[in-house]
Length: 405
Image (cartoon, rainbow, N blue to C red):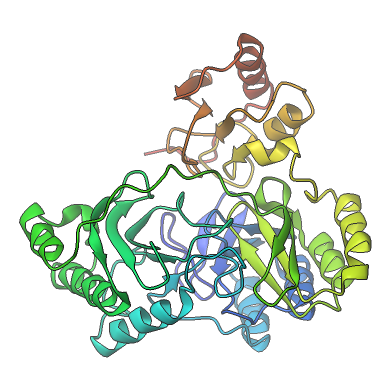
């Protein structure tokens, strides 16, 4: 077990943070049931400080663990049989294989890439944060999620592949069928592995990438993507619907998560989504109103117009030892201020590392040693919003627990 700050945390390798040790894990497809989610919430209360998070990539985090309690939590999570994967896995959208509006099902291609990576000895040969996303499209697309390798459906049989960023910033190499795309992805992963365990795609030379592009058909630019929200009702291929909710600022108490799971106990599955999303599948239609009421009572986000969906907050104080203000507290103040109209997002970054930075137009409140600053990215905020952010950042200012590098 490692407790090194800055590591990529896993269930068995926690990371030291400001409020103790943190573990991160991603349940396998179809494995997160209401019963298992309830058990995770209960375990977070028993072994950590009770805080559970859904990350910007749709993974679970449990906070506030100690050297003694982290192994106990890990043992409990393993007992839940969540199908946790070890090493490189291709990430897919929250409703992959199920969404009615999906361009193509990414699950077969994701399975192929994972299997080829294992067959070529690549699963554990890459830097821990090397990532592959395979996006079938639809309302809950992955266009905003950055990755070393991005694969996106163009049609039912064609996929485009790019490297190094989200859909807007990636270098797109070209397009091909599923087999061509998978082979190209494995070649890129092999190049990274051959250059050392710390390599990422930004270290690859242009001539190597030009050679890969020569084997693919050109790909035209796709339309600009929108910001996907996990809150609402999502039609599924089988004619049913998924009911989407979100944790405020991606975080909730374990006991509240357990209560939500109990209210959804007759559902067949719960899926996690970027944006703190909880998608409930297989719930009898007549139980949906009661589940929404439970979500509102727990202060979860159940309304697609909730202003909290426009706010992206880093861990902040006291969770992060480097934080210069309490990002969640600023977020709560902002959500109730009446200053947000949905035209832009606000990023609350409690230090200059800018963790949790979203894509697209935004204004960012940045915690700095000598006061908070504001940065605008393709956005023109009202003067009142700028003044409010600066004032609230200073009101919730704190002293970092450790010196930032």
